[in-house]
Length: 166
Image (tube, helix red, strand yellow):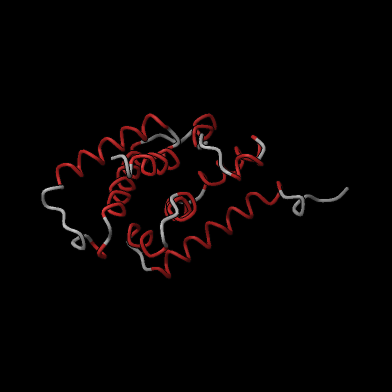
């Protein structure tokens, strides 16, 4: 748990936009891992995934299930997507920019949002992230490219280059 909890919680919080719900997902993931522990063997998972990758997959599926049961998110719920650990981007981004980015990420189609979070926030190798999503590496790269393109278009008004001059 010590090794994986923080990353799994970050994944669930980013996808769900709710830290408390992310805690519930993590608890479910570790209960499932505990139940499977006697049968788990390295290299026996789909695509010879590592244990941590398998845990990410279980968390991703739990988040998908919760999102399907949910009503549409309000703008207030998007504020909860904020990651409280300060990183370089957060230190320099204004609160308005952060809110716009979170909103743009939340507006992405589910698969594109998952690809973006797994690659950029969870820092999983593309091959592992592709296996988690059940797609080829090429298909994963395509999802990621479409997500990045959509974000660039959505966030263009915030860029000094995207502003029109008077």
